[in-house]
Image (cartoon, rainbow, N blue to C red):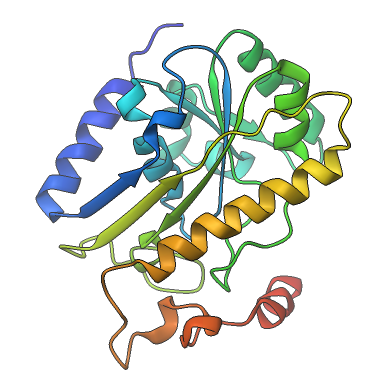
Length: 241
């Protein structure tokens, strides 16, 4: 397919990263294949996560097609960009259409990016995840690659004002060893394994992060590490409202 929009968007993003002097660390990029299908499954702490997850595939020269909620495609600015980069809209009332589109892309050798939590985690821990990523990987024979991003929540996350101009910010992107689910396996069991691997990567990213929050900025640290972010239980109540 023609790539008219995606390459200049990547160039612009990298230019902005340099202007902001973001301290981006990517580990495990060798797990993203140089060719052929793959499913990238990442945690979700920020509205910007897809940009940084995509950056993790850049060493392999891969363009990631992300599954994103339909409302993003309805936006007058973001919509044309999302469609131009061949991302996949997800209508939560009719999710099978998006699943079929993603599966077709995988079978044609594309890399699909998925946030299995479906929404941003307010607690900055890995929520319960959906099985779609596992089912797509099993049906297409693609490797299922767990990822974790951390630091992006400090730029723009749910319930907090945007801070897109923050300079010198550390951003961590960790990519784990792939799983290889098959149609014969129980998707719920593989989904539990995927969630465990995502949580392990996220915990490593959080504990190895080079900065600690100032006393008035503890909101971006999870509660179990001494921060003031909601606990998973409190976050679930907020989401339910």
